[in-house]
Amino acid sequence: MKKYLMLVAFTIIFVFCTQLNADTWAKTYGGTGDDYGNSVQQTKDGGFIIAGETKSFGTGRNDVYLIRTNSSGDTVWTKTFGGTSWDVGSLVQQTQDSGFIIAGCTHSFGAGNEDVYLIRANSSGNTLWTKTFGGTYDDYGCSVAQCSDGGFIIAGSTFSYGIAGYVDAYLIKTNSSGDTVWTKTFGGTDADWSYSVQQTSDGGFIIAGTTYSFGAGTPDSSNVYLIKTTSSGNTLWTRTFGGTSNDEGYFVQQTYDSGFIIVGYTYSFGAGDEDVYLIRTNSSGNTLWTKTFGGTGPDCSNSVQQTKDGGFIITGWTYSFGAGDEDVYLIRTNSSGDTLWTKTFGGTGPDCSNSVQQTKDGGFIITGWTDSFGAGYRDVYLIKTDSLGIAIEESSSQNWSKATFRLGGTALEISKNPFSQSTVIKYFIPIRTRVILSVYDISGSCVKTLVNGEKETGTYSIGLNAKELKAGIYFVRLTAGGDKETKKLVLMK
Image 1 (cartoon, rainbow, N blue to C red):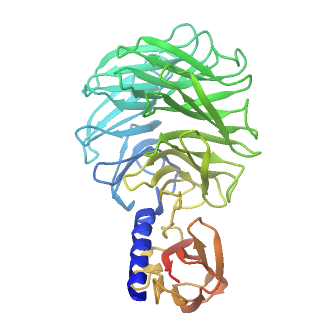
Image 2: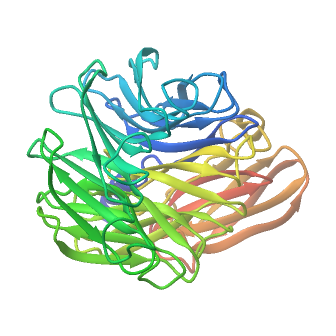
Image 3: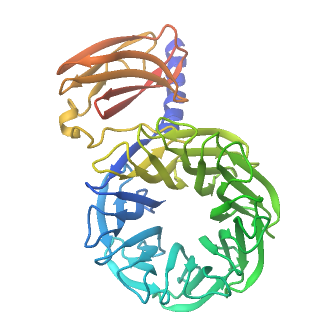
């Protein structure tokens, strides 16, 4: 009976562990120049597509950077797009035919100094067509979505056209070939910007951005700007949110009840210099509630998604918390915007996140850039977490290759796993370096440090006595130089 109960208990823990931490990791991509991840989406095959910008590769000073990975974050292919000048990819979406649409900005092509840049690629990342939109002045593309008719909707900002201001929110509708169907501008006599667009369930569009023309902050400060249009781009209503200081909206999504969730930052409210600003509205854009997140330093968010349980996942960056001067910031809330947990990721240098999405397994995928890890000054940063926001970082090409770092397929070997009282951990060090071997619980807290000091090249073993630990799931992490390797551990008592 005891063996049977142990087997049942192990099965329950194993299933829970598999669901919660089935595939967690952190990866970097790039070369010796600056490389940034601006947008990420899980693809239909369970992998990921990332859009951003690169100075390491391509033909110009800065090119659009597209990275396709498998479900483990390993590179399937990379592509660059652009000319001899400056080109940026702001957002990518997988299309109905499993290809990709990328929106951004180009200095290399178009009619003006900077134009909206739209790139259509097939499932292998090869160009099907490119389009530019704009006039003789600067025009920016920030967001794109495929519409129900197979065409595309693009949001950005325009200096070339507009109502009365020198920069206005810009909305472009195209057919499936990227040809313009119509364009619209929104704004007043001061600066107005749009950063995010989505087609709504009624066939219209919702746009989020920033306005200096309207709201409580005018004329000296900005407010969050929310615009609802018909399917033809005609305004149904507009809303502003914020106080008398600067407040901006960077991302909007329609919620399951046909309302809207908007995220950005606020100087008017909150605990610090600049705080994450989360706004929940009904279908008419009227406020249901607002929340702020952050500490005494600057904190900002530029991506939010409603999760499967009706709550929200938010990402951005924080100076208030974390290991470095700027860290990736991940916030999980319930449906009322109350905090369930927060996480930070990064090292001693600046690290930032620009996009988050819930994955099919209930975890989260985040992209941005890192100055703490990777091959260059700044590299694309891709983090896969479980449903609790825990990410197990794998060794990357920071100081050693994986082939050098691993012994028999891994740098860590655990003699008994699951175990009930004690086990032995074996690890290999290829060069003399400082070694930290620690045990973490499922919340990410360190419960034991087994090794912390310089080690010569060689293979080492150390015992782990679990007398003081409760039964559950743990992680053993080996940090050697700039590399990390983590193993899951199950303790049964």
